[in-house]
Each structure stands twice: as structure tokens, then as C-alpha cells.
Image (cartoon, rainbow, N blue to C red; front, side, top):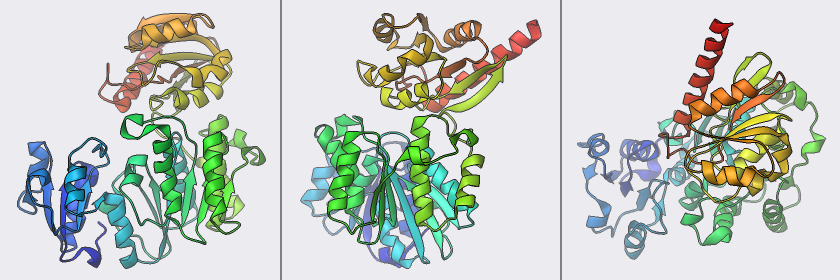
Length: 437
């Protein structure tokens, strides 16, 4: 794990003992800090019992504590811990801020930080892959993979690649990322912010923490991201801020896991960062070709009888689904679940790519009414029925794709469980048809 003398002899409270909270406790204790920890789950508290003081921070006097470490999942706009900590003059921070404070005691390194509404995980994984292929010591963490504090510190010249959600940025104040990327912006998580502008401002803070000489790269696909890029550029030296031009990046046909216009932009951002890190073109081009996409994000599950099956379960809102629809010209689209909104407007530019839609879950009836005037729709209700119907209707050259544009919680534990179920159903039906042939 990462430790630092910066925490020695200090007092911290930690609220939330899932992955990042537990890693924070471990780092602080190993660094010589005194820790009071709490989680509503008894089994989570048991994991630190005997090492940390077990107490709900809402029930104790926080005066004199050096930090109130909270999980990114704690809604600071509603949870009473925010007012309680502020009244005691205690900074409210997260594990990324602890990492930022520990950096001074780590071997010389660089930090790459990536945010945006959609595409963060793919771009973060791609940058990490390119850096690894270039021979740099590297780890990936933040909102993806293992908590960054729980990973071994890198040797000199290492690159820490972080995916950061707005929630994590809200709890971070001194990261000073050497390279930072803002992919895109669309409404999301508005229950945590004072409207869309509050959400946008949260993302922009990542770049406001940077210093002269550090690099910022922005996507070009939406007006709000370009506006924030211009605002950041106005206060930074020339050359420190770039907006990518995906059309200038050639060779996408050779990158099987990076298809679609959105992935061309993701690749352009990753390449801009690779160049800034001094990685040569033959290295990053080979890495783009060898990159394997993330599970549940435009994941190629199978191909049978000329039909490609795509698991895009990670697309939990229409803005995330839209690029997947744009990536193929003939799509049998399985969508629905627990809706995050009432419309599919973000997907409308690609409705012409849809051969037929198959609606499932709580959003099914609403989505069917939206789509029936513009395309054939099957009201499938259940995922297994939708996959079977789509498989029966698909012709060679077509794509059967689960890209729900919804959260999963009406029928599945999470988007991973939904994607796993899709994968299993596809495999079973292909086997069944093969046996019957």
C-alpha cells in the first residue's frame, strides 16, 4: 500500500468502509495516524476493529481532527456529516486527497487524471495500456480497479493513471495532476449538485488544481466541454491546454476495441497524453491496436451466423448509449431498466441505425411509446425474451446489442450482473441453435 510520513501523529475520522474507505484506514494506520472509523454495516466495522477506534463521527466531537475522510458515495449536499465537520473546522476529504498529500514522499512520478460524464473508464484503461506498453511502471485506480492507496507505490518514473468521478473531485483539493483530461459533459448525478452548472463546476475543479506546465486535454464533442477548455486556457500558458481533433487521428479501422466516433475521441485524448509523456508514435499505435475493451462497455461477446453480439450494459444513461448506436449501421437494440430520465433524445441522431428495438424493465413501456413512431419495437419485458427475439430477427451483418440507457436496479444487482446475464443468455442460445441445426 501507499504510506506517508505526512500522516504520522495526526487524527482522522473515516466514514464508509467499502473499498476506498478501507484502503484509507489501512494507509493512515500504517503511516502512524490515529483513526476513528465507522460504517453502518457491522461486518464492515469488524474489518477494522482492534486497529481503529469504532465510533460514528456524527456522535463525537471532531474538534482537533486533521481530516474527515468520507466515501465518494456519501451525498455531501444531504448528509449531516458535512455540517458536523465544518462546524468543527475539519476538512472533508477523500482517498484521492490522501494520495495527493502522500505524493511528496513517493519516488518521482507523474499523475494522469481523467474525468467526464461518459467514456472515463475506457479512456483511463486505454491510457494505462499505452503507458504500460511503453515500458513505464504504472498502476490504474480511482473510480476504476483497486483503490489507489491500496496499491504498491511505483518506482521512479512511474505513472499513476486515475479515473475520477465528480464525487471524488469534490473531496480533493491538492492533486495537481501532471496530465488531466476532460472527455465530455452531459447532465448526470444532478441530485448531488445545485443544477447542471454545479455538476459542471465540480468537474472543472480538477483543472483548476493544476499548475503552470501541467497539461490539460479536452474533448470537442459538446459545447460545455469546449467552454470549460476555453476558460482554463485563458489562465494557463500557451501549450498547456489542448482540444483534440479526432478527425486528424487516422487508423481506427485497425483498433477492433475502439470502434465508433466516441472511441475515436477517446483515442485522440489518450494519444495527446501519450505524446505529452514522450511516447513514440509506433508504440502508441501498436497499443491502440492491442487494446482490449472493458467488460460491459461495447464488449464483443460472440459472433454467430454473421451476427455480432455486443454487451454495453455499462451504458446507464441515453448519452452513454448514443455512441454505441452510432458505431454500427444495423443494430437490434435491447434497452430499458430503471430510467434516469423520461426521454431518449441523446440517442435520436442514431435512430436510423436501429433495425428494431426490444424494450425491457421498468422503463420498457415508456421507451416503447417514444420509439414506436420511428422504428419497429418489441415490448419484451425480460432480457432473456429480448435476446431470443433479437437473435431470431437478426440477419448476417447485423449487431444485437444490449445498451440499456438505464440503471439496472429494477431487475439486476448492478450493471455488471446485467451484462453477465446477457453474456450467459447469448452463449446458451447460440449453443441451443447449434445443437438444433
